[in-house]
Picture 1 (cartoon, rainbow, N blue to C red):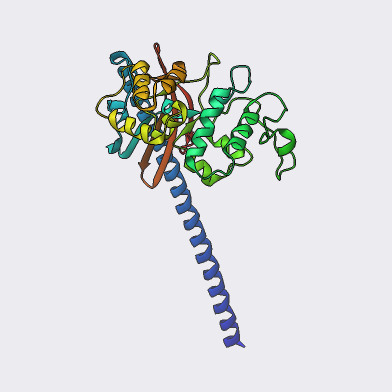
Picture 2: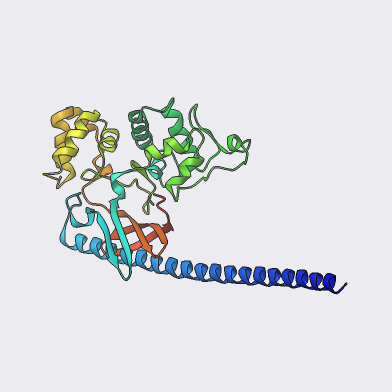
Length: 319
């Protein structure tokens, strides 16, 4: 009997020890996780501080450029990539992209929300150059309906609220200017793969005076030049190559160059107000690493005579 009692007591002790060890292990594990969480929060905050510091540096660089130059092109200091550098115990990198080197989707409607025929034709040509869309015109019309204020479908490819109401989940058109290029993903006929192809070529920018934003002929890629100036892609590619050594000082110079290659009638048909050699909108793409935390941020910046201001800011690069 005594031996049996000693055996039961031993088992009881072993169970108690196992419980204590398990509880202690759980406490230690939770304590370790709490430390890691706090560390990640701290490193995340420090990474954000680095990203905002790079934003301030970029804004000053753009202000200095505006004071000293009348044109913007890819040979200027602001256009050079900032490769990873050590900063305050972390690593930061980034680049500044001229958003007026891209086609502004908000140009597809005017300040009153009415379709802009010139911009529609430019966007249609841009989609045709992509070569992967079955009906570029239908995509253009669907985007116009996403932006405009009425419920009347534009052309045969137009899509209004009734078309989106039958989707799962259902939603409505914006009826206003886009605030992010990712909105294009919501437009009927657009998918993620197509959006990724278009992302380097399009943007969404505000139009404070209701007029379309101009395309910077010194920073736009060949496809954007070909689409907006209505010239062959080969001509646009030659222009992009030539401007590396001699950026355009004026839109008139660009128009003359178009006339030399595509003919005077093409140059004459250009609305020079839709082109520029000086930009007001820039995107800063920044990245920072502190400890085990890596963050990316996009910063949309407007530059004017009185300085710069941040229009939008978000983690990850949405533009």
